[in-house]
Amino acid sequence: MKTINIGGVPEHFNLAWYLGLKNAEYKDADINLRWKDYFGGTGAMCKGLRDGTIDMAVILTEGIVKDIIDGNKSKIVQVFVETPLIWGIHVAEKSEYKTIEDVKGTKAAISRYGSGSHLMAYINAQNNGWDIEKDLDFEVIKNLDGAVEGLTEGKADYFMWEKFTTKPLVDNGTFRRIDNCPSPWPCFVIAVREDFLKTNKEDVKTILDIVNNTTAEFKDIPSIDRMIANRYEQEIEDVQEWLSLTEWSQENISKETINKVQDELLALNIIPEKWDYKDLVETL
Image 1 (tube, rainbow, N blue to C red):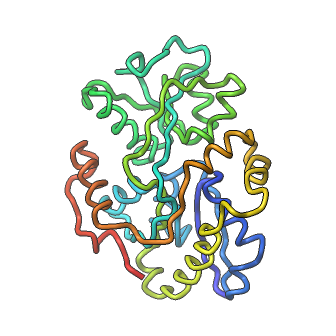
Image 2: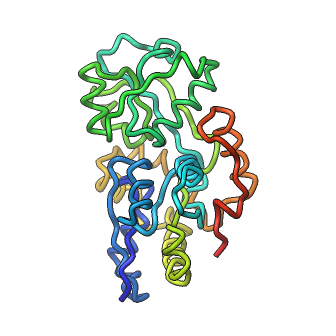
């Protein structure tokens, strides 16, 4: 049985993977798929792909595109979640900041440079007409726990993270959400290390087939809203709203989307150049 390591954030988006593992679907296909939770998000997963800790990752689109161009020898093989990620923009509950305009020029908490929380701070700044050079400042906080500490202690002023994941922290009075910022493209893709992909293409196809069968029928699973609410400590109403807004994909990323992501990142000086589709994406 072949052991394959995959990483992703420990969030409700990835429940389909857990269900396949729980039901031994990968083992039945002679694959020992080992899931690793990455609390540090995209930046930590990029490092895992680079150093070979993981073979595959369920990762933010903009983050992996940037990191491949920066030298991460991986390829995108499929879109996992088709809909945009809704980033909540949060401040500490007792913060004096009430609006987006209030946090202009203050310090954004980010999990690490090159992470989704870092890149989306640029998108948010652009959306609001800020000066990218003058109005952005960063404090690295590693993960969500670090953000709680950073905002509460005043090391940083605002923090962007997926709004449903942080909703319990808003409900319990740790954070206040002052706005939302949807990503301008499909949020999660599946990326694979190039050297692993060369010799394990059929196994990767098998893994995708299994998870795609689950995501295609995900919303029809009996009591799926209750299962998510219990596992991820969410209110059932929030889960139902999230399910209504979220669509999974079983297809690869389009050339148009790759162009759009690169155009945006290039305009913000996050990448130095655009790459051809074939250098970022592998068609299985």
